[in-house]
Length: 120
Image (cartoon, rainbow, N blue to C red; front, top):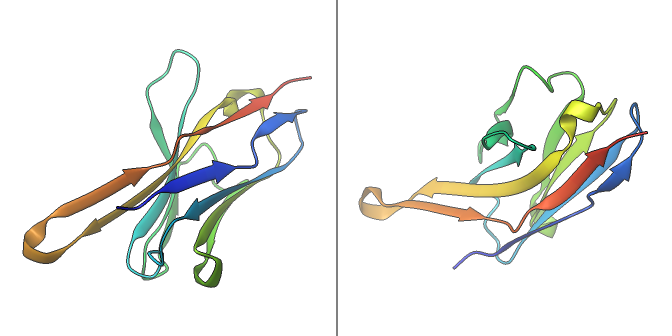
C-alpha cells in the first residue's frame, strides 16, 4: 500500500508562483512513474506533468515553460514548481504514482488533492 499526500496549494495572484509537494509513504520514487494531474471547475481531470522513474519528463502544452516537475528520492517527495500562474490554472491538483509490477500487474495510487486558486 502506497499513500500520497499533497501540500503547498493556496491562493495566489496572477503571475505569482507556488510549489506543490507530494510526499510518498514508502521508498517508491525510484521505481514508480510520478505525475501531476489537475481538475478545474467544470472540466475533466487532465495530465499536467510526468516524471518517470528513469528521469524522463513531459508536460501539457498549456503549462510547458511555466511548470517544472522534479523529485527528491531521498525525501520520497515529488514537486511541481508553478511559475507565471494564470487564472486558468485554478484547479485541484492531484499527485499520481504508477508502475507495472510482476506478472504485468498495474499499480496506481492517488493523493487527496490540493486546491490552487489563481485570482486577483
